[in-house]
Image 1: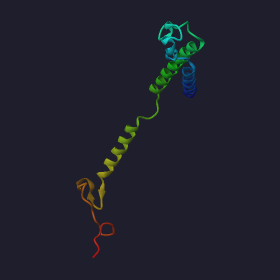
Image 2: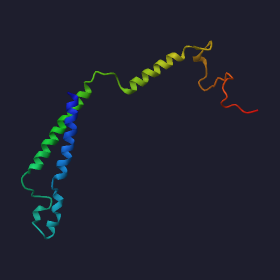
Image 3: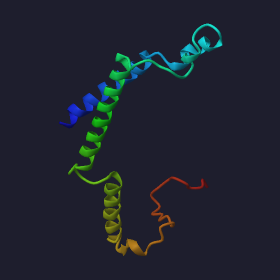
Image 4: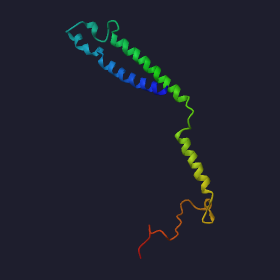
Length: 128
């Protein structure tokens, strides 16, 4: 059901953009106020609603309905938690693993900033 609402939502958005771009704006007749037409056409006295304006308002209303439906679907999801919740769960597991013994000593007693050198690494060695 949610996929159908998504498809309708995207298609309504495209249709709404096309309808808005097809309409004739009120500012397009601005030159008429300066002597080449009736003075009532400048930002006022528009005629009755055209088919395009009624279609635009209908498509906009349907777009809002699909937006509210998608919000409802997202609020009622029963899947796992948030991304941060899964990250925090992963941190809890690593912290519990840090309390185990490493090389015979407890890892919780080691300084986190201290690097333990066992002599097998050739990284960061000064040549003699």
